[in-house]
Image (tube, rainbow, N blue to C red; front, side):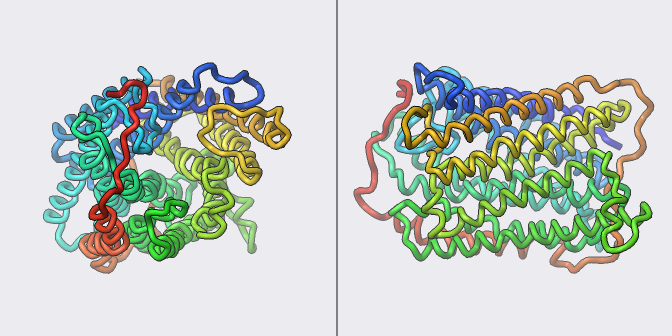
Length: 539
């Protein structure tokens, strides 16, 4: 039973086509700011491209993947038709309409404010309205996910929610609360100025509200990837999931610890006190716990697969793993990039060490390793795994899949590692051009050039990914029934790990404690607003 095929396909195709466009823009940005290309005649073109790239990669791609994958999980994990199919289609078209609405002023040069908005810069009002439409559309998905879980539990009293659906619901609830920060910033502060009702904006309060969303959104991005870690990878490599319970613990810990940490992005901002910066830094360290649990659990699951294939001794199981299997490659590459990206994140979350690399290319390398590396490569896996069932087609070409994954991994490492070195040399991010003939900048020229070459590999890999999906052979026999990973021990779980009320309460409570005072203090403080700066004749 998979009645939502067309719905899921629609989400994936829009997501991946937008992804391909943003990928090309990203490579163009790297080339034009490298020694291989003369300075951009109009630097606004560079920031126009960065805005489009960030908006697609930060909002459109992960939202559509989470929604499409979420609808698929609802049917496949709960083994029943999706309730609210018409609402699901309505939410999809809202996201598409919002994407087009936001992209239009960006393309016209009237919204080059980057995906983080950067008040007091002010874009055309339709850019913000488009983002609002995307978020509201995603909230419909949150509501449908919650409703389907509620109805399933009512029809299956005493049964545990399937792990895939448990993770899907956790991701939906996390996004619902995560998006409140940016939504509040747009609705309460930015839109009144964009409509011309106000000529000033409180930039400090805006940054605090956006920080509510800024880091927690990363864990919304990674939820589909972590669901794939637990429910796809062990089955795909011929093993079993080491622990269903550990997966549930990881999902609820993300709910609790993902939210109250965003102010660590504001270490250099004077409007937030040092005490709250320290608290957010501590909680940022705590969010590593569910990731470490996941790495342990999936490595243990891989060991089971290796030993089932005849691996013996302390490390013989590693050699016995199916290294020609694209899924095995993908999870390995993902963990490697997650490790490097996480290590860089330790520097970012340190109140003292962050001063060394704040707003440098180091930061760009860090979040590209985490999102574009560890997370997006698992988006590829999700699409590869579902595609035969979505199209009722033959299995995809594993040789091409391996090439595509290798190119993505190598390209991402070649792109991001030099960025880290450039950051240590002091290279700022988000600059349209550099004079590499200057003695102070000459050492950065090589690192920037190498990164551009890595970006070209990423473009090739991304286009190959689209090609693999587009050329899938239709008309094959119906694939076997879709299955998820089977846990080693499939017994009952504690009630707290089969529901969300406790964890949502903790999530909301910690957010109020960690954000309540800074937000109220800034909102009540007089004389903090500054004049808006319209971009590209936005007003």
